[in-house]
Length: 536
Image 1 (cartoon, helix red, strand yellow):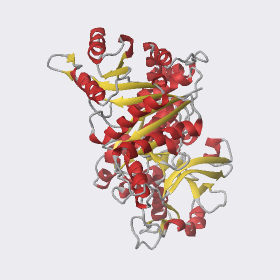
Image 2 (cartoon, helix red, strand yellow; image 1 turned 45 degrees about the horizontal axis):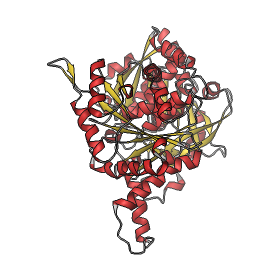
Image 3 (cartoon, helix red, strand yellow; image 1 turned 120 degrees about the vertical axis):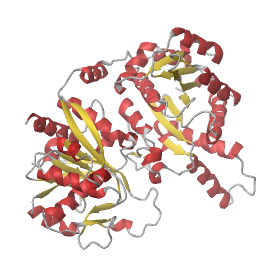
Image 4 (cartoon, one colour; image 1 turned 45 degrees about the vertical axis):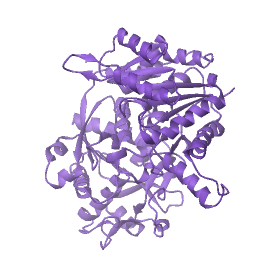
């Protein structure tokens, strides 16, 4: 079968929900028996998001093969239940870097390097890699940003060319747009959508389908108007109102008839009848009243919740399994250092400290770890959260007052967290950490082993510093249990406090592998411990 392509573009504003829409549609196509692959094209010039501030980019989502990618890859994996690869995300920075490197080596034999054909050919080559690697029936490809952005133009031109090369019958363009609501007149406006479609058509792309996103109900006459002025079939204008339940979106898309319309446009017949019982159960459980528990998420980027989007979703997944409603209190770690928001910490039934880089706010996170340990409050530390849990233990249990990480204080006499040996000679910051899927052996009888129900696991990593083995024996004698180690026993992967209901830290990022229908074991253990603590 010839691979079919569905390209997603955005109109009016960014963050309109292209990624979730693509992921949800991918789920509906998978339910019909198709092998679906995904790809995100990011027009920014950075080589990857690994060195970008979370305030600007949000979370960096790490894949099995170590690729640092856009957070939309998390949506794809969670909705479609696939494991994406490095070819599933590329940036303009990677494209230009490839072309310039070839030019410097003389590969173009002195020719003039231009956006067309050199840049566009490289973009098309990278798009084709998805089909080559996984041989999918359908590739869902999302272009980041908004139509009209200067940096997006080479990508859109590449898609226009690709349509001719693979055949128009094998390509669909889905334009996801936003309908602004005018409060003074209580009406939605379609004019921005018309302008964004006009901009798209000016470069030779006419959308086959328009997804009209809104926070308010979209009347039929508005859809008729969009169809008329944007020259698409009436059935191809699909209103999508913001849902309170993220995982309801595939079900909402199903009700619109969009999946079957898409298959009709691509001349494909469903291979099986969709079965949404599992998804319906998830939505029903979300909507069923449950006892509420408070979780203090102590981070340094909490102003932008997207910086911790996988953590947030993993909490929700595990809360459903534990039968509770998780209410997250977003606490800035720097506020704790200024004695602010202490009452939120004191009211919490559980505390989670996610990853991060740099010294800002780390003392507040250490305060949170100490509060959890001393008050027997369930605690889950992720990457840096595990390291700071160990630093707190060294300071307040072992008595090493200046214990720290060499990342934050190179002069510390007790660097219980230190730079990995293979990182000491590295000068480039991008893509040089311990990245991707690594195995871990679990110690029987520990909280981690009970949570996983296994003695060997594989998890995704993103870190440069590690626990300093010089202190391992001393920690163990004082009550710290290293329940997860690398297969050679040299790297600490999971630590936990022996005399505590649930105080667990992982050097890896378990949130990346959590799914709505398969919550991550460490999060489930955390939420179940919270449920017990809340009852007490």
